[in-house]
Image (tube, rainbow, N blue to C red; front, side, top):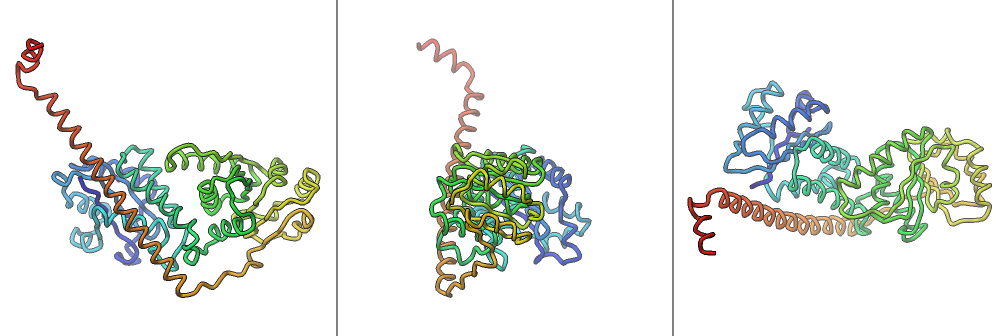
Length: 381
C-alpha cells in the first residue's frame, strides 16, 4: 500500500486555466466516488480551494494505474493529456505527509502563519468522511495534520510566525489571564476566524465556551459545526461546556466570562445599551476580565463597563518586532517537529499495513483449507 497525492496549484497552472481544475461541492462529491472506483484505490480525499486542487489516495500500488487519474483530470478539464501531465505534480508516502502538514500549518505560503489554509483541509476531511470515501489511513493523515497545526499555532517559540488575528487573540488572553484551563470565554461573530479561535481554546481545555450572534440560529449552527469537528478530529472526551447565545440571552455569560473576543465578522453596532446595563446589573463588582476587540466599531459603549472590565483594542496592542534569531528558531522548531511527526505517522502507517496484510492472509487461509483437513482434525480429537 502507498499514499499518493496528485495536484495542481496557482504556480503550476496559468491564471486563465486554474478555474478549470477548481471544484464546486457537487463536483468534489462526483470526483470522490468516481476515483474511489478506480482499480487499486482504497481511499480518496480531495483538498480543493481557490489556489489548489489536490487528490490524496491510499492505493494498492500493484494494481493502481497512475494514468487512470491523469486521464480522468484531462477529460474533466478538457485539456490534452500531455498538458495535464505537465501541470500536475505528485508525491508519495512521507513527502505527502510532509506536504499536507506544511500546508495546514500555514507554512507553505508567504507570509507564513495564515489560519485560512486550515479551513479547506478541515472541509476535505469532513466531506471524505461523510461520503465514506476515506478509511482509517487517510482519516488519520488529515487528523494528524490538523493536530500538528494546533500544536504549532499554540507553541510559544512559534509566535514570530503566527501573527494573524486568531493567534493574537489567544496570545492576548493568555498574557492577561494566564493559564486558560479554568476560564470561561465568549466569542462574538460567525466567521471562520471565530471557529478557529474556538478550536484553539478547546485545545487549551477552557472551562466553557459561548458563541454569540445577533441571530441565535447563527450561533447554534457554529456550535453544531464545532461539535462535528470535535467528533471527527479529537480522540477522547472534551470537558469544555459549549453554549450558543443571541444578544438577548448572552448577558449572564458576558458578565461571567473571563475573556471576550469580538471578531471582525461581528457588527458591534448590534450591541446596545440594554445589554451593557444587564451586565452591570448581574455583576456590579470588579472582575479580572479582558475584552479583545478586532472590530472597534461603537467602542464608546464599552466605556459603560470601564469600572468592571479591561478593554483591549488591537490598535492599542503593538505588534512585537521579532529578531532574526527568533524567526530562525521558529523555523528550526517547525522543521524538527515536522520531521518527527512525519516519521511517527509513517511508522504507524507501516504497522497498520502489515496488520491489514496479515488479516488478509488469515482470511485467505481460512477460505482455502485443503479438502478433508477439517475432518482429519476432528478425527484426531
